[in-house]
Length: 281
Ligand SMILES: NC(=O)c1ccc[n+]([C@@H]2O[C@H](COP(=O)([O-])OP(=O)(O)OC[C@H]3O[C@@H](n4cnc5c(N)ncnc54)[C@H](OP(=O)(O)O)[C@@H]3O)[C@@H](O)[C@H]2O)c1
Image 1 (tube, helix red, strand yellow):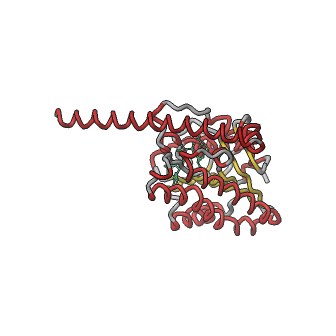
Image 2 (cartoon, helix red, strand yellow):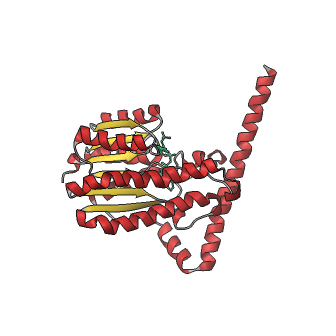
Image 3 (tube, helix red, strand yellow):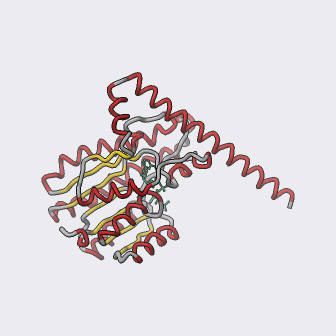
């Protein structure tokens, strides 16, 4: 099938990896359905895609919401008549010691990163089966493979995404449907801010190269994509050496915890300054 005949749904295209992948895929000129909650940001992505000559349908919606899940699939089918690729990218992290993590954060993490991904996949698969072709690309994380304690629930959802993808890959291959899992390391997006350690100046890698690699999966599907590359030997090392596993995981956990504390202090200082300004007025 020609790339320009593909209909691609990307969730979480209002920022970060989802937006970068959408812009990268634009070079193929496919039809794109982009989804996110923030209207302004999503419309900005839609505008950039249109400028690149892409037929795009932006859907403002929350992937956790059952009606929105149905709307995403129904509107796509109504407008374009097929779904060739679903990129389950929408997701978030919340950094906290598990003992301190509010239930609302636990719910949000599981509902967004796991439940919504499973439900959207469940809705799209019968269509792909009927078509005799399709490709599901699920965003996991390297933290699914080397999980640090301040992101226990997040890491658990991403490990579940890996397991889910591995299972359904075997089930759906007979229908001509492929399943890929992407495991990004730390990338420079809004992720760290949403996760609660972004104000510390924590830096990740630029998303452009990662987006190119994810876009490449469309023409050259792979089961697993781990990026940046050096996480591949790191993951192997932590698999075979208990000592290294503990050391690497402790290193990541400490880095995140320090960044989270610094962020909290910056936020508290900002808040106090604002309170003083209000009193002074
Ligand atoms: N950046 C990293 O270091 C990193 C590493 C490993 C894995 N990942 C994974 O990569 C994916 C993309 O993250 P990112 O780094 O690009 O972070 P990001 O810049 O914060 O983007 C997250 C995207 O998900 C969307 N989203 C979140 N909750 C949603 C909901 N309930 N309904 C609809 N859309 C929702 C956001 O849009 P709205 O807020 O507008 O809804 C946004 O477009 C996530 O699954 C993340 O876990 C990221």
